[in-house]
Length: 191
Image: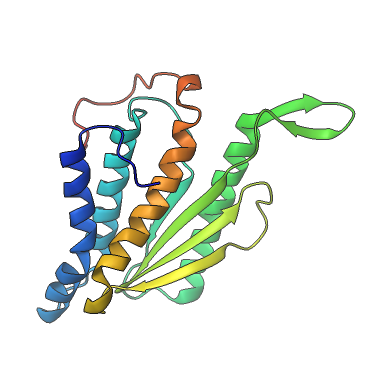
């Protein structure tokens, strides 16, 4: 599941950044900072690495993951609403792109609808959720809540985040040959 497809040095560096994320969160807290943006940025960086590793970074695709970063003053209800909105949007996009018109049975799809993955960054926690895209109105399921202040869990937390991103990468890789080139991409992959 964690197999690297190319450039293993970059993959090791990307994974190490996730494993050391807890240390950087605790350092930021010790000086009175807010770690949400830093955590979300690191997760997005790992996602970009996974896209390069999967060989589809310059292709047009609908993601199967979303990262929702809460503001420090945001309530749990508004974070949940933001996640639900993102998951519903992604589910509808996948349904529309895979739908095959069928007058007899209603709706058919060219391939099974994907499981969607959500990573919610809320203060010093990352909440891992999944969502069945075949049921856009359904509730997302919480898999785990990772506490980045717990130094004993740094390695586990890094691997858990990586696992979610790699599961999403593997789904997109399964259809990589069907994807069209994205001519809107810039040469700067961090742009």
